[in-house]
Image 1: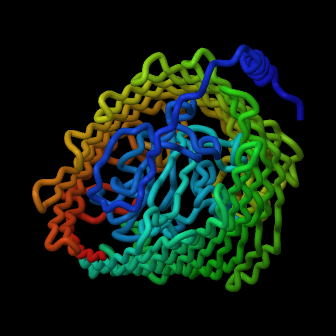
Image 2 (image 1 turned 180 degrees about the vertical axis):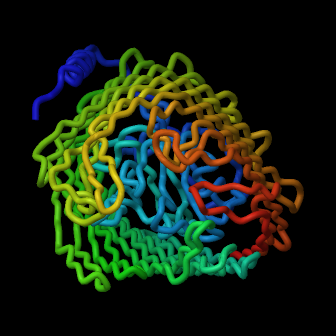
Image 3 (image 1 turned 90 degrees about the vertical axis):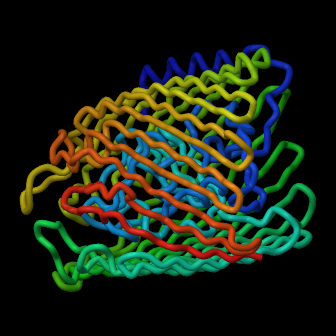
Length: 622
């Protein structure tokens, strides 16, 4: 496939800049990860170290992409019963649909992610990672939101905008990376939590971790159940995670991360047409083994990964799917001021499906992808960082495509940063779209998107951070479903231009408290499904003596249940609040009040969300 003129000009300019005289040295990194601290640990804005945007540890000041980081302290104190709910509250431009007290569902648009209006239903335009490995349903190409429990996650990084040059297909709109909980200090810890609430909702969880010498480990188990706020909306979720690490020698580490989720849920149907017996039985499991080795050239990373699922649905659908692969990359600093990463990804995904009621066999399908890539960063004049990335994605059906990225970061002072970037996103058709249903078309072509953005971030006294982002995205060859059953057709018939801006701020008024706010304004063209045009978020987390008060408020405007501004949904304001009481040094109690203003709202057409309700949590830890 030939490179378009736009790509050529971007790369010609970037290569010329890369060969310019080098600066003296790179900016120093500040460690921003958690260290196994409790949720009331002291917080600072210390320019967090990020791995998702480049696959190597880098200071946020060195990265041209827009990345939001949620540390364990923020996740633990958020007045949300779900991990994804806490993420949505803190990340501008991100929206997640839901329809129940617990669980997100797998049909009718439930549990879809949208970043800056890109996602889809099912969501195939945003890639979810677990510790850097892709986590998706191999046949449908989408993540399963019900498989993501809050327990066992210590950090979340969200890349807003294309990350295809590092992760290939499905990362067109962005990436959400869930990073496993680890024990960072010598010793052991155990935490148990129980929660009871309205609609016969109950949760039980247990977490245990330790670190001794060269070994560390962390295990979690959680059970969530509810009768639901509507008839026939029951949910049961079992989640298990495991992390194990070993350091055989200085500069070398071996890690294993595993997850297992068993989900049983019911879909109550539209409020105008309630349904009975619409059950879903989902089993998801994943595993990765990784090796990190510091050598004379820099750092070598090798990861073997697998993700597997088994789905059983009330209408007779049965499927078994898989995604497995290998990631290998070497980062190095060949000379002062230059960092390079050279890597290759290989993955294979697919599975088999049938409908035992309709007597239809969809067959077995498999697609493989191989992609070498490189990434360079050049420091100039101590204040300017130039970056260039290129991925050569070879798809088993579509041949090769080049996916470039270029960026500039300017740090005129220690507290001020300016960022400029251009990147191409890419999504190949899923196996469902090619061969399964509802209107398979084996002649579909991949979707593509160019994203351009500029941003300014300002941090002062390690207590206040402000970021503003302007962006424009131009997509083409979108896969759309046209017509109505039985005369439906999937075709590359869509294009869009998205533009908008995002503003986010965080203030630490004192050591253990935080106040956050964000605003995103999107002009979505005709891609309006499940993506609000305006989103305002406010978060407050303040301790006082033995109490801790938390509040999360969101105001959503211009939300539609379909493209072309169809199925408009009412604007709404949602407020969740929590009060935590430290009963003893090892025992906490927390009261959560969900939808405190008793708002009547929907995030997807025909599925009213629960009104005001409460949950009481007890957490013990040693």
